[in-house]
Length: 406
Image (tube, rainbow, N blue to C red; front, side):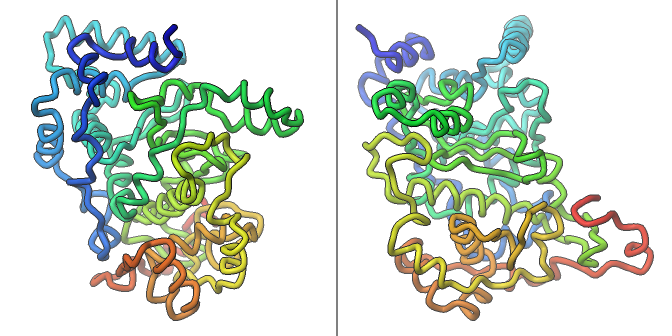
């Protein structure tokens, strides 16, 4: 009798690919060969219009992975556009029909899904090389990412070491979730939390190897005020687009009397990736992961807890983070008093303002370098040649929106 995952895999694949899957399909995927680690400031010091790969480079990446792998593109595009919402399914059916009528190339479906050829190429290239799934929310009516967002995600991914990226993409599918809840006799209140955190279309994210790739999707954070969030134990980043985009360059804030000259959404993504890394740092690749149960995180390990609590956070210049995210208690950035938030903030500061962190907290910097980043070090915003913020003029101060609003 076929398992649910085996059946799903067969349904997903065209006949020309099924035999390859059975014989270790697509061994060349997910090499991080093109989206390499950026340890310098070259991606940090950019606006949303610069620093990302051009179309020609994206085509080169796609061609590299598709050579001698018949059926790969179709399989990948089916995966990158999978949804369970009826309106999504109806729209995709219409797109496929129109592409067939126009006898368009095989990228047509993904291009129409994104309404942009550039976004389609970037989504496909990022998946092939980094196993990152970027898609619309399964809630058909939520706002959608633009090509601009995918360019930013590309840059943020390149700030994360490949060995960490690999751990972020090995989450197990939740096909046994209900069985596990019943077997372990979990109390009703905890069951409710687990089910709330579980995405309603989790099955649409199961790749051929049975894993849930790292996913970046639009969503609604807590009370629609949180910029982005990662549920404990998951590897899915949900972004409240309107709040997230307040950190884009050229936005002015009266309260801190500054306007951004670089795209400051990148630190937000690094912080959220830190939560995913926290979730999977100790995972052995075998033990079932059902969100926050039955496993330890970097931020919950008994030794690390003391290291993190004792760490002194560096101060972000001019309280940048406080300008665009609502938090109840803001202390030195996005840390709100919770240990997992402090770890994510330390992680982000290690990558983005390393000199300040090393000066402020040398012991925590050494811990991150030796125990978490395996010796990898960075140059941060301090190394940017040109200014990355500027002060508001008199008139800008008079008309700039209140804190956190454009």
